[in-house]
Length: 288
Image (cartoon, rainbow, N blue to C red):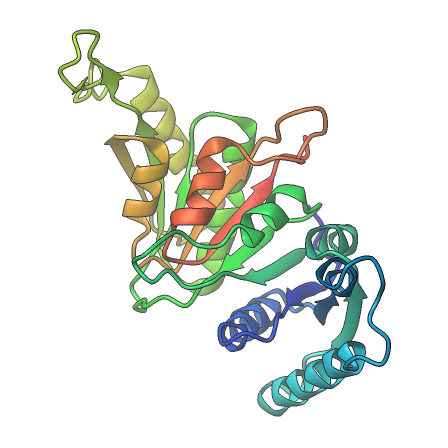
């Protein structure tokens, strides 16, 4: 994972962009990284929305994007005058444009439409997180407290172990505790009576429980002063993580990558977490 590139903050001009910008700048300050503010302009809709021909003499979308980024840059520098910040307008579809830019970034920050109780978060953040070449933070405004922990999910995979180490560093930088969550899904009852709890749920010598505790112990050893708690949950992993992370400072998940290209698709748990979580989510790709 790169540590020398900029923190790229993608803004779309919606009401949530102010929170996305604030969150991304705070992360850049913690990392002592440069900031690159970007906005994507996709003019293809003008062709598809008005038959086969492009619109001539339409609004200056590109100029509006340039001015918008300049305004955001000015506001950023008022609050953080020492942060190096540049702006860039991208042209084309959002996901491919951000994926190309992410190759040289250490973190890509995107906003997510706030949940309103009527449905899940929009899919753009999930698509960007799936295809980017660097860690992606999907940011949504959420209430938190100074005591709120960083939460990470582990399942023994290399991707989740990489995520655990990133989460420990994020918690240490923030001065927060870290909660390591391992969830084992319940077993469907073959007789159709709901589900059965996993075997050896309360057995501390169970190999799965021991492995999760070892991860927590290693993170404590590698990060002096970091408070690490282990939570062993018998539940659907995505439901367990989003539930444990309600009100958390950050939820970190690993992405193994599925299909023909490593890192190109999110696993089902990571995808569900990005869509359902009510706190910021950091997706760490397995580049091993």
